[in-house]
Image (cartoon, rainbow, N blue to C red; front, top):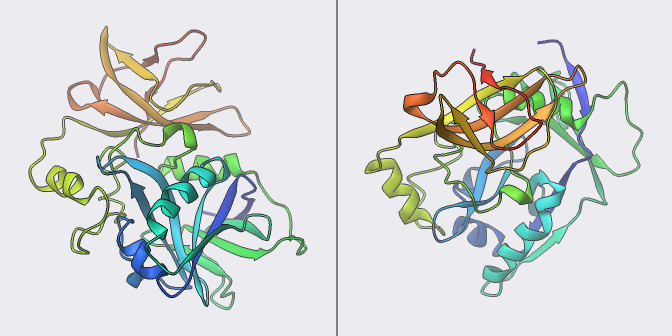
Length: 275
């Protein structure tokens, strides 16, 4: 993979700061904040008591606070959820998206450039640089959609506000992405998530689908295959060439179907796209 840079202007930052910031996040995230540092990005989720993901983000550390990187349209929802629990802690939670700019990198950053924080599990493939808003940008920069296309190709999901509360971590393949720590102890939704891990019998899994043109559809939109309900859409994105990749939750007995179609008009046929 040749190194490319991306302007992630559709992503923003939440700051969680204060002497109890780690304690708050320990009780809410699917991963442990104790394992977070200033050099890496840890994929993690915030869940409701039913174990469904309300937000999906990368967690990293600054000198005095934790930063959560996620789509801007889910920031208000995420902050609202965290603040309901924050009343018990000495912590402040703020949207600092107007203060920071995010630059994505595909490929391995130069070892002498410590500004890039590497995505855990994909250290040689993806990194993000967090810089001050207004700082000069080095071009050329590709779009957020091109970045999301690369994530989708690696079966890394993202979650906008419209997907909030719809999917369990296992639906998003988060355990395989090391975005769930089953040894960290209690957090909101933990009992449901642990039960699914150790006693559940999953009959649907995340798959990657492709289409030859863009389409518009919400997360949760139903998909059919072979005249049967096959699953539902999780997220999708189109690149500059008009090709679309989608991540979807598909029933195991239909995951090898020749084609899939969304239950709405004017959408293209989707086909299985695996490495």
